[in-house]
Length: 479
Image (tube, rainbow, N blue to C red; front, top):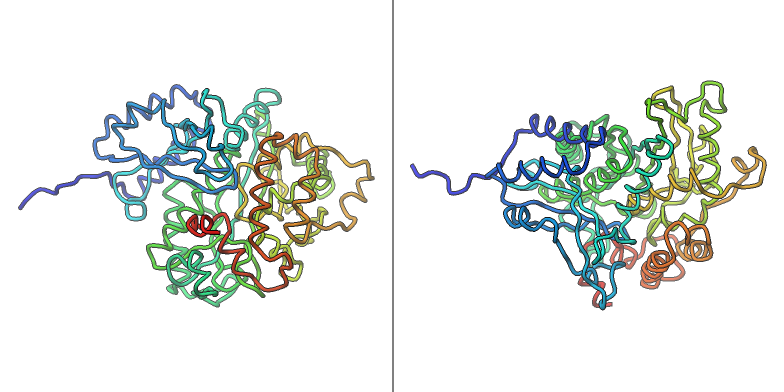
C-alpha cells in the first residue's frame, strides 16, 4: 500500500479550542509583540504540515480580504508583504498604490480543516503605507493604537461583545445571484427559539457553533431569531480588538459553513421585506487595571455609574452624525423601522428596545451598555473605534440629563439624510481625519447613487447587487 502523497495539518476540534484559547489569553495578557512574533515564526518553521498562511486585512467599508502566502515564502518575506492598494475600494489612488501588510502575530488562529481545508492557519494583519507607518484608512490599527493609548494613560481595558444576527438562505451564492432570481428562499420558517433538532437551520447552527468554539470564541448560546431562517450565535466578552476580529471571523465561518452545506449565510441588514432585519447589538464596558468594571454602580440610575452615563450621553449627542458609520449601506436603513423591533430613537432606556442605547440588567461583572443601532455590515474596527472614542471624548450636550436621554429624536431614515449629517459634522471629520472622512463619504455616495432615490417599502435589487459585502466586483465594474 502506497503512502499518502500529502500530509497536511489537521487538528481535532478539542485540541483546536485549547490552542486558540491559549493564543487569546496571550493577547489578553499583553505579551510583547517581539516575543509573540518569534514564537509564531519558530512554530511555522518547525511545523512541516502547514502549506499556507492566510493573511487577512479589512478595507475601509469593512470587507475582509484574504491572501494565502506559501509558508516558506512568508518566513523569508514577512517584513515586506506588499499589495496594490488601488485595487481596494477606499484605499490608495492609482498613482500611490503600493501598500504593505504588517502581520499581527498575536491574532493567530488554527483552523478546522474540514471547513477551511487542511494545512492552513490564519492571522490578521494591518495595512501600512510605503514608509511603514499605519495607513490612515485602516481602522484596525487605529483601534489598536487608541486602545493602547487608553491603557497607558488611564489603565482602561475596553470590553466588547457582539450579538450578530444573520439569515440562512437556500442555495449557495444567493446574494450574488439576487439580481437574477430577485428573491431569497427561506430554509426555515420556525421562528424565535423554535426549530426541530435536525432541520437545516439547526444543523447549520450546530456546525457553525462547533467551528466558533474550536476557534476560541467562548460560546454562550445559539438560537433561531424572530424572522424566518434567521439565527444568532452568542459568545463571550473580550477586549475590543479581539472582539472586532471575532466579528470578521464570525461572518467568515458562517458563510464558509453555509457554503459547504449548499446554503448562504447573509448579513444584509434587511434582505427581505416585511420581516425583522439583522442587527449587531454591541455590548460595551470599560474596566481598570485591577479588573474593576467602571460602568457598575449599585446605587446609580439603572445601576450604572456616572462615568457610564456620561459615555452614553456622548454617544446619543453624536448619534445622528455617526449613524452612517454604524449603518453604512443603503439596505441598513430598511432595518431602522420601529415596526420590526429596530432601534431608531436616539435615547437610552432599560426596557425600550426601540432606543438606540439599552441598559441591560447587570451586576458588578456584567454591567454594560448595549448600542442597538449597529448593522452587521458596518466596518467593525471603524464602528468600535467610533463608539469608544465618542463615548470617552465626544462632545457633550448642554441639555439636562433627563431631557437628552428621554426626549424623542430619531436616527436618519435613509442613507441620503445620513450622508448629509455625516458630511456636515466637524466632529466626525476630526475623528476620522479629513482625507479618510472624504474617502468614506465618496464610497457611501457611490452606493446611494446606484440605488433608487425614492426607496419605497420593498427591497430593491440594486441595494443588494451593489451592497459592499456582496462579492460582486464584476457587476460594480460594469456599472
